[in-house]
Length: 372
Image (cartoon, rainbow, N blue to C red):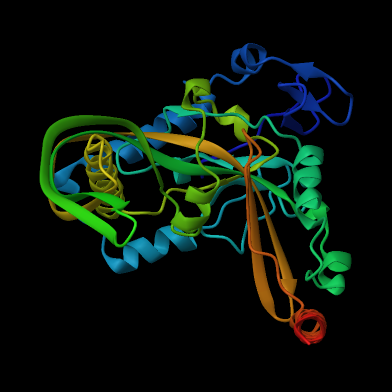
């Protein structure tokens, strides 16, 4: 099976991509290597035919003569087992979507290359992690400060050591669209002649049309991770994308692309249509209010690129509920909803209500004393 494992060039120990050093490190002997050194020993173009076999899978998937896989065949692919090249143990028996993780027995980092295939594509570029685990933990702990309604039990139980570095598959879409909008615009003027107050509202109909290009619109290609969670940690600085190498996945987790291209296109088209209409509305200046009345947008051209973005993820349980926290592994942007101690919230509400009521009574007594 297409499972790859890269070992230390000096001692043969497990090797991982070290975020802080931006190098490939061996925790056993402390050696560090560059990407070029790793590729010289483990060339991805050969790699015992693994990379070629993945490319063959991609070409077969794109070949119409192969036909669509039956549901039974799809299930067979997901149920396929993989064995660690180092110890022979089964890799990731409980997961169907991970493309990079660790052997459950010897803990060596492994990559299941064929799970990286998306349609007829392999990842073309990647943003390596920039935020370390310590930095991710610091960002998370800073979000717990000054939260009086945060349950003490949750704060005590959550462990930042549970953060996992995950490469998430994305598609970057370049689109061209044509859009037109019609809006109602108003200008309001008020004045007084000393006896009366006057208000005059002028209403206009404004129209705009144009052709716009949107480049690098991201769409999360993993069904396991919600679009809302990933959009919340955007944007990623795509200027830092580098040519993909599976070596960057070593020592980290990577999700396989599972979303259908049609669903990604639909999601991106909706984002582009909304952005195009808002962009046209922003050109209607000089009015007190602008209200969209109608709009029409068509996608003229669309292409996509398959990339991988870094995200730190932590799942915490509290009162039988799962709370997911995500941190952009490049910029450090945080997303996640913290639980609320409703009992404490109720006590605070009662106390505040009592204070407000006492202040109102005192104010009333003072007013009566002054009036009397």
